[in-house]
Figure 1 (cartoon, rainbow, N blue to C red):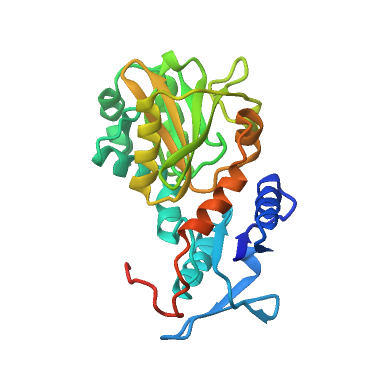
Figure 2 (figure 1 turned 135 degrees about the vertical axis):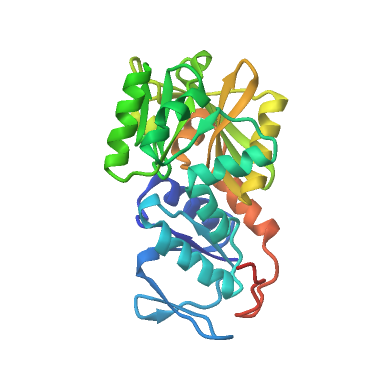
Amino acid sequence: MKIAILSRNARLYSTRRLVEAARARGHSVRVLDPLRCYMRIAAGAFEMHYQGRVLRGLDAVIPRIGASITFYGTAVVRQFEMMGVYTPSSSDAILRARDKLRTLQLLAREGIDLPTTVFGDNPDDTADLLAMLGEPPHVIKLNEGAQGQGVLLAEKRPAAQGMIEALRGLYASFHVQEFIGEAKGADLRCFVIDGKVVAAMQRQAPEGDFRANLHRGGSADAVALGANEAETAVRAAHVMGLGIAGVDLLRSRRGPLVLEVNSSPGLEGIEAASGVDVAGAIIDYLAAARPQRRPAGAHRRKG
């Protein structure tokens, strides 16, 4: 099988591990910088070039699209889809997952529990908006933040109102959620592949912080998920249409709550904490799931 990994940096841990796992299984693999991919779009004649050469004969592509290049990166993934190349996570699914507010709305529609969330625009409505949420603390999140960036904790109502006014002054898009105090700064990262949780870890925020992201100094350990937690993670990935996903959960008094669904979850923390060969599981999934290549232009139209 000929595989392409869309990644800006071939030296990143996740990219290196995917390359190693693919080659260990006898596959041909190549890392492509998505910003160096450029395309020709014409009826029945989709074409992709990379550094002056036409890309042909790929069987599957693994998107590792960073948040900062979402628009261009998903256009590249979409072009590969149009060319009949298999991808475990479609461009549309990646775009859905990148919008945190949209993700929450889709999950709630399917009955998947999450922290109570409010969203509004007009400053005159701020007091009633926060009243809908209940008493502080409140968590304020940018709708397109990543790795714990753009997540703020307001312990009192005046602080929440001040933060909201400041973000509106910057024309930022954000939502506000209830704070789940019983989680005690910990969350669960569930790595879902093809409708199964293949690895899980519990992340703990450093002292004095409430964000458990490893990039912000959090620690991680292997964890055994309850049946309800595993089911919630699998359902969340399915609702978002992602064959590969990192689903973040909080343990609360009312059961597992979905915080986020990540379309390009990192491998370093989860492999180190769980001891599972997640990269190998991804490659095995591609090999089993990949259909026969369709001719260019045969992509099913979804809009």
